[in-house]
Image (spheres, chains in turn purple, green):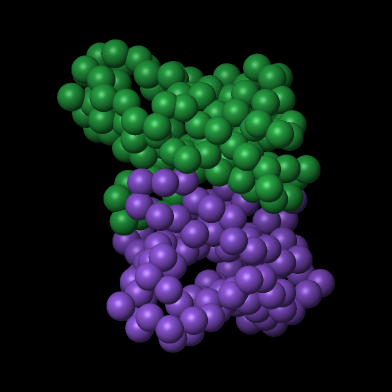
Length: 110
Length: 114
């Protein structure tokens, strides 16, 4: 698997606004994608997933969009709340191997 | 959803001692488990892939004699940090794959070596 130990980009949003977190993946053969949320000192928490035969999937307050043409994945969080402050990262999979993006640190400003 | 339990959540130990971290899939059988290391403000660094009943596959640069991995059953994998030193201090996280798809993570173990 591949994961990169780089310092995280950051995103700050006002409480109540929508957040969009982006992820570029590298392998055009990846057919399964997951978004995770990680709070400080905790393990990553599954948020939502999408398979490559879909372009969009919605959950509770979250939407994942997949653009296979440009190998881009995004996570949209509606009406962002302070509890959404965390690091978010995407994962791509071609089977039983998972590859992670560098992650984005989201800060919600009250 | 599926639950992965990781224990202990925090360890403080003296330099030279060995530390064992357990990772259990509580409600599913995980043929594959993964071990990661994470430094503050950084992403996950995959250390090794653990398959039940076989030797773990280590990522380049990870010392297999330093980080011993045992995956004795479909629900348990252990990571032992042998002769720990201060530079081994880190946040260690395990994950387990459900049917080769969804990947669920443990809560992590913060290791501090004095």
